[in-house]
Image (tube, rainbow, N blue to C red; front, side):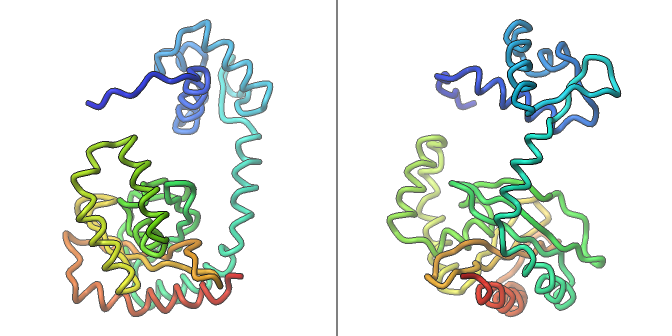
Length: 253
């Protein structure tokens, strides 16, 4: 197991651990439960919780005595970011048409730093339920949406991206040649394909959404249930997917 370098801001790390725990929990947690599940010392946990309370990042939950849940500030921040995604209103009607054409669940993802985040989706009644949700974050080079976006970035951007990825995950060095081939293929074809990013039985296909400067601002993708999406099937799905991406791109300034 890779040993992470000791953080220079342990309080920040502990705050993130607490927020992640509360966001994932099905019920509010007491301080002792939070400390037990995160491994944070009780005294530190008490100080951090109080600071998070002051900033409304966590809140006391009235349904359970002395227990904590995610605070309103988190939702305010998330709403602000969500509302900045001006592409979302255009996504729904186009995704509905695409869903009915290929009978698959359709996703919209945007790049955030060195990750790609799912910001919207349109479920297909004929498709299978997938283990992917709004807010899910994936490394760019590991997802179809991320590869579609990354393929349209400049060589300098790609070099900088992989340099950063190698620092945090040195093992990626052995896969760089293969990933580079995937990105080159995606740029040439206009779409990217991955297998197993959700689970081993699911493939994903994605096309980039570009602004007027031909810069990738998002990606539209479809999840395909099955062990492997062969090249012929990928070409079939890509016709509708690329057309949908072009329609969305025409609405981006």
